[in-house]
Amino acid sequence: MLGGSVSGCEVVRQRLIAHHEGELATEERLQVEAHLATCEDCTREAGLIRDALGRVLALPVPEPPAGFWEDFGATVRRRIAAEHPPRPAPWARVAAWLSQALRQRRIPALAAATALGLLLVIGLVRTHRAPRDLPPVEALMISEDLAIGQNLEVLENLDVLEDVEVLERLDLLRHLDRGRRPRLS
Image (cartoon, rainbow, N blue to C red; front, side):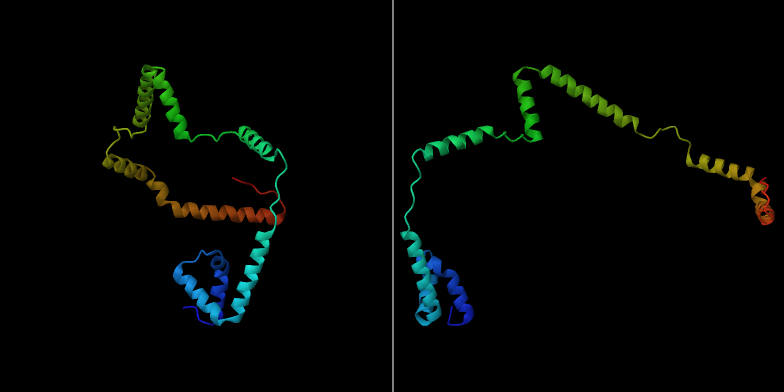
C-alpha cells in the first residue's frame, strides 16, 4: 500500500517511467494509479515524464551515411582479426599435447618417460628417509653422561674460573685508567 506519505511518493516516482512504458505488474500498476489519483505532486511528475518521453520519441532518427554499415562490418572484422587469441589454460595445453602424442603414436616414448619420471620420484623419496642404523636412545644417553663425567673437574671449578675472569677484568680496568694499553692474556 503506497498511501499519500512522502515515502509513498518516493516509491511511486521511482516507478513512473516503468508505469508509462507499461512494464509494471497488474497489482503494482493499480497501486501507482491509485496513488496518482490522490497525489497532485506525483501526478504533475508523471505528466512531465510523459511529455519528456513523448518529445524524445518525436525526434527524428538520423540515417547513417551511405556505406556506413559496410565499413562498420569491415572495421569489426579487421579488429577481430587483429586480436590475439587468448592463451589456453595449462591443463588444456597438456591435454592438447597428450592428444597430439596419441595421434602420432608416441605411446612407447610417453610410457618410457612416465616410467623414468616415476623411478626418479621414488629414488628421491627413498633418499630422504632417516637411516636405520642409528644407535638406540639408551646408547646416546650413556655417551652424554660420559662426556659430562669427563668434564666434571672443569664443572666443579667453575666458580673459581668465574672469579679469575672478574680479576682479569679488574686488571684491564686499571690499565685503562692509567692510559696504558691493556695486556690481554
